[in-house]
Amino acid sequence: MADQTGSALKKAGYAFPGLGHVLTGDPWNGFGLMSYMLLLIWAAWSGLPRMSELLFPPPEAGGFMLHPWIALVSWIGIAVLAWHTAHRLVSPAPFDPEKDRNSQWRELKKQFRRNRMGVIGLHFVNVLIFLALLTPFIAPFDPDAIDVGPSLLAPTFDYPMGTDEFGRDLFSRVMYGARISLSIGFIAVGLSVSIGTLVGAVSGYFGGIVDKGAMWFVDLLLSLPRLVLLLAIVGFFRSAGAQSIFLIVFVLGLTGWMGVSRIVRSQILSLKEQDFVQACRALGLPNWRIIVVHLIPNALAPVIVNASLAIGSTILVEAALSFLGLGVPPPTATWGAIVNDGREYMRSAAWITVFPGLLIVAAVMSFNLLGDGLRDALDPKLRGRH
Image (cartoon, rainbow, N blue to C red):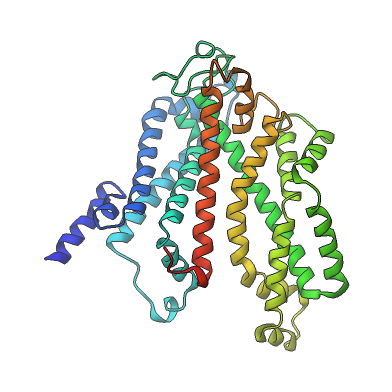
């Protein structure tokens, strides 16, 4: 009888994904899935009346745009993900003793789910990403359109975050700004992780003069204040339009890889003395294959944790550059640029600064919680504390 009741509660997720998780004692994942569904409902309710206009804009409105199509594909993908997760609760994947007993991925998921704050961070990160992807359906106005409402209007039902000094809808600008800020964070961290992993792996594997030279260069760059270095490079190579976004990403990536290289180097120094590396050498495998195929994958656990934490700090650095007027130039919306736009109106129109500032705090906190959860799940010494 109890099994039948539990099965019926799980099937509630078919009606509304997440409900089955909440009813069967997994509220954190349940509320996370329910937030995705509410986001999908919001996007459909707001975007359906404008769907043809978004997907097939007239030539005078700028013609074909890719992002509404990305939003449509994302909406379908998020819906499939939510219902697939609800289905997996009812019909879990069969356990394969030979394949799954020693599966590191299964163990990682098991340990990560025990960290409630890490799970909450993961769902908050997903919500921010989904918001950025679904922005064309959710945002009611063009983020750069002026006089869509009264100037410096306080938040109302029609303008949930108010308007700025040019009468631009702040909610639309914040939503579209999420695309730029999050993209800069992900791409810049991906670039820095790639460079740092390669430098650290080569340095740790070959040792000797290669290691000393690489670490001397890393120590030199670490001794330079990053913000001052960023200000100097961005100010010297300042450009406009889309080129400025690529410049910001490139500079943030090139100034953030040093810590990753030291982490990877310490891992490689330990791994290269183990038996499987000696066996690879005895088989005559080339050095590049040993590094890329055998060493780097085994050194990625701390790199993944570092990357998840670095995304939040990179978003913060981009916001600081935009606040100082050296980020993405106007009228392109980023969270830091919107905060900068509102600094002259802190007394009379504080909402211009408060709303993007709160989203910056939420994004950084979410990535930090996710990073802490991954660290605890990947480190055997920290397992079981949550």
